Image 1 (tube, rainbow, N blue to C red):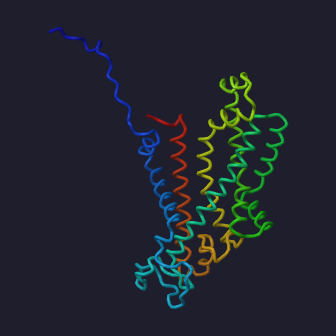
Image 2: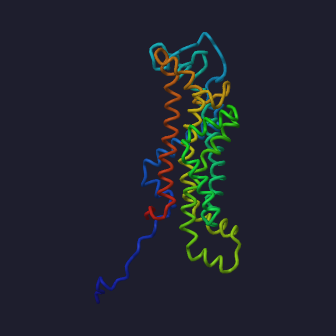
Image 3: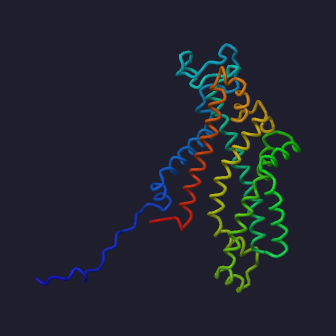
Length: 301
């Protein structure tokens, strides 16, 4: 029997994995998976809060004041994370507080995306005097610290959930405008943009259907990270009494109410602080994974 040389045999290619690219990226990035799990838990808790809360978060009971967590010597198994100065269940209030944080984060960032992307897209693509004017506007807002600008806006409009969403949305657009403008400046010099101009497509059509889709990945990653910033800002403003007002339950309000009891009832401020920190950390880790999954330069396999 004639032997065929190994060098002449056709190369057998391994079939590509049937898993989607984002799933392969997630499997390589275990830290991103941890962030995704944390964010999923927070979202499920916010959406289905009444199903998980063991007690009415607003129910007062002076007989059950300052009960420590259940694992403490003086704890009560009915109150896993203890009770506050008015006898309200801390765990139930944490669960209901997640809803406000998610609402403020998503709606506030949505406003920032709408305003910032519009300005960045217009400034980067049109250029000229429009770009100079909008760039100076962005530089002006960048010169003012975010939290100070938010405090000034809340002081002008007044505290409250709706006003807080508007304020955080209209003070967080600057980052989106700068990033999108830089991306657009790089994209608009591509050959397919030149071809679109050559065949007579209008500027708004080119921006919406050719430029915007190519900067969407950066917008998604930036929006994810911005949600963490907005949640921390909401908690900070509520802590200072300039954000959401009682009886609406938020983690910032719980933190503010518990700060005067740290020496005797540490759990009142500790658990809201842990919830804020874990949520922000989970969102940041998920944003880091999204960057790897959506950027083709970082994607492998």
